[in-house]
Length: 174
Image (cartoon, rainbow, N blue to C red; front, side):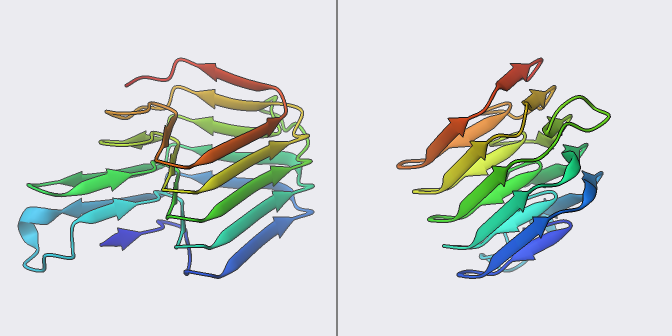
């Protein structure tokens, strides 16, 4: 398996990124060629930029100039190989919150642009019972993300997305 091109948050752990002058995750990737491995467990590529392990949590808050995930990639090839979350992959029971991030030069508090998964969730993959919360970010924009299933978001059983924000989905493709 390959998880978290930029950051891996272990199961049960937490990550807080706050009070920064802009947060930028650009051109990170996880890539797996299952044909080149001999281990049956080595078949998942998840979270091009950020991976949250089981019951892990992450909070992005009060970042001036916003938070952006641009051009991240999670791809896997080969029989029984899986890819999820071009920018972010959330394992079962994990939690991700974006609160009070100010608009950046890209005109959004949070931007997901041109992220790719060759299977599920171009921008974000939410595992079973995972929660995504978007609150007071001025604008959350999902722009031109791509996956085979869920161009912008892929949500598994029991996952919840809570929105107290303006959210714009444009030019995403599955």
